[in-house]
Image 1 (cartoon, rainbow, N blue to C red):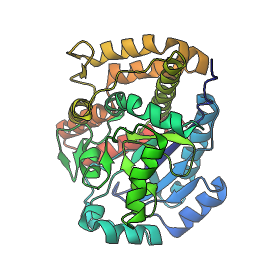
Image 2: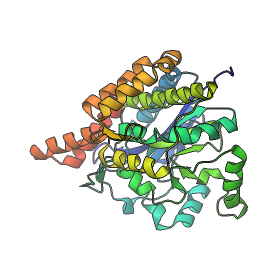
Image 3: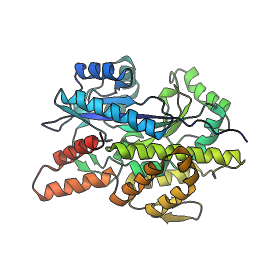
Image 4: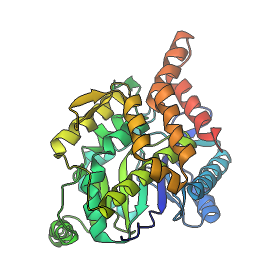
Length: 373
């Protein structure tokens, strides 16, 4: 029996910067980026818009390592931002900001992106979280990718944090995905039979000059261009550190489970993207409140029942990876609601009290960012 891959973890998060007084978006001062980069040695960078900042953990052997590193990253950005009367928030959409008032970062990559995508790029006032799971063998990455796709809607549902857009309640749990899906080369990835087929297919666009490399392919799940990983890109940004880590732990455990199936010459059943897209939409629209389709028994199951099945399915992997507490955190998300639910509750409470609801939501998001630091 072949050994399981190391399944190391890496987490990338994008934050929005807000002014602590007005609670509106604020552009990152040059000094903020410089001090963060000096403190974090290449683990922080500007993002597409000047009101954004991105961090990335080191390669982490365990979720405990990821917790330590991500907490350090969040705490450092928060501390340095406070020196400029700013605060980061880890949320996929600011509740009342207008995208037309934002400016993209002056950097060659972002200048070219703006030129290539036109008006579509201007609306990209969104943030996400990317979870990398280390798999050295490219053939294994391609084999696992369509199997892992089945679980992407579940990850999205648990992470939803973008109900508001330009001050309006969109009635969606993840409006971010609506904006992101306007880009080319997004959504669920196609099914490839081999690594060479993946390289031939993506290489066609590279050879034609349509894209320079596979970093311009923004599927919900992709083989990373820079690292020997599968990169899950479906998740909204998580305001709370512990919720972000729980989603990373779940992704790692699912990947390990699929690897174990392969050791037994088995695999997760593949479903057409048409069906998975329906669950993706349900997650985007409702988060965890209306359940997802279980295609195996052809029923719509409430999310608490789905989570119970998940935790039973992943019990061996949970124990082996040492993620028991982290996966149990998922029960807290299901019991109390995702960030989308919490934001709506804060919004409604502020409106009842005659306060500014949008500002109340931002204050809430600032508090959640700092809660676990």
